[in-house]
Length: 289
Image (cartoon, rainbow, N blue to C red; front, side, top):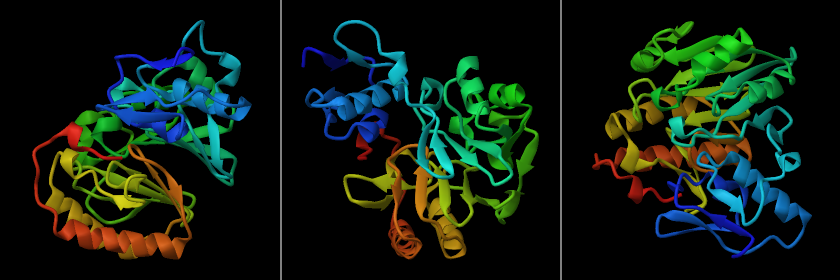
C-alpha cells in the first residue's frame, strides 16, 4: 500500500487493529495495512490507530499525521473515554478516563506522559485519582498523579512498582475507591493485579481478562501470566459472582459491551475454563487477540 504503511518498530500490541479493524490486520506477528480507506470515516479510523500506536508505526506514506484528526480522548460511552497515545513503557496498554457524577474524573492506567495530553484530559474535569491495575502499567502513574494533584493507587502485591503510591489496596477483599467505584483484587497475572468496577457498568480488567475478537468471548492471556494461572483461576472464582458489568475495558485485548446478564454468563464460563489451565512458559508470540 503506497499511502499508508506499518514500519518495522511494530511489536504486535494489537492497539491499531482494535481501532481500525478491516483496515489493519496481522501478518507474521506484526500489524499491516490491509487496504486504503474508502471515505472520511475510514481515514479517521486510520488516524486514530496511528495516534494510539505506542511506536508510531502506523504512518501515512508522505507527510505527517494530521493533528486535527487526533480523536483522543475518544468517547466510548457516556461515562468512559479512551486516552489513546499508548506508551511503549506499558507495552502499549490502553488507558481510560472515567467520568463521575460530581464532574470529577478518574484515570485508569496511563497513556505515555505528555504535558499537553495531561491538559487535554484535565479539561474534562478535575482528575482526583489515578488507578493502576498492576505493575506493568505503572510507568507514568506518578507523573500524571502529580500533574493532576491526584491520588495514585496500587495493590500491595505490586507496590514495588509504585512505592510512592498515595493509596495502597491490601488483601483480596473488595474496597471502595470513590463514588460508585470499587477495587477487586485479582492476583494472578501479577501478585497485585486489580479489577476496578464502576457503577455496575464498567469493568476495567487490566491484564486479567479481555475480549477476544478471535474467539468472540472473554479470554485470559494464558501465555503471559507472570505470577500464577492457578491464582488467577482462584481470583476469578472468588470474584465472578460478586460483580456485574456491561463493558469490559482491558489494558490489552479488545473492548466490548454486552448486556450485564450475558457478561455474567461469559465471565462464569471463563472462570470454569480457567480452572483447567496450567502454567505455561511466557511466550508473547502465543498471544492470540
